[in-house]
Image 1 (tube, rainbow, N blue to C red):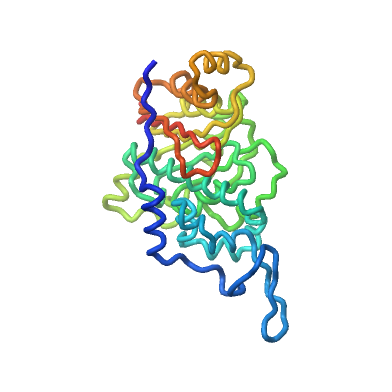
Image 2 (cartoon, rainbow, N blue to C red):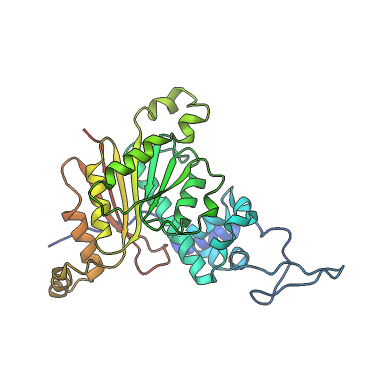
Length: 320
């Protein structure tokens, strides 16, 4: 059957690269050496003291990829970058190999871009997240949750995962970021999420309130945004279920990972149609798990996300 897969409008890689070359990217912290020959190498100062070795993130900020990828560029220009680079509690997030770091950063900022795209469909054009509650499902170590928290400081971010033993020191000091231990496959997962969100208000409401005028009018009704990045198998179906059950203005940003192994027909149908099984799985979710009545839906592939699974499903509804 004929399908139209929408692709978000972005500058071409050549345009982004040339524009980046013309702009000045922020340098790594001043404590770093002016040059280094390989990762992990430390130089000596004139006084003989050992300078700290470069990390993967320091090489990334001086490398070519930050000029060629718009999401890595956004990371390099983030106003909170210095805070993250210097925070001891964030070092475990940055202590990964360069390729993995580029992948995780592009996924996090790709999710952020998709969130802004979905919120714009509900009339929330502001970038600070005022009047928005975000539920990051199956958040893992919370890299994406932290980026959402820093990039949307007036949003309330609830990071959800069933594993209570993860190292989440980087959540400290973020007044708009909380963790909830929860198995999203439980029948009452939606009610538990709503209860957790009700326990605390976001900084947009608790820290001095809204400034009035147009900003206050735009945020009279809060928007609930469910985010699920690289959800495996049936977890994507549960994310869509939580979206369907939520009252009021709601949005869903979903990037499925592996297929649901229990749905063997998906691979069989994809093979018969000569369609990529992952794309067919995403289409199955789009048309089978997200209601069409009163809902705006789209599916697109974001080639700037440096992952083989870079298909995003967006859905929004304005509620009753």
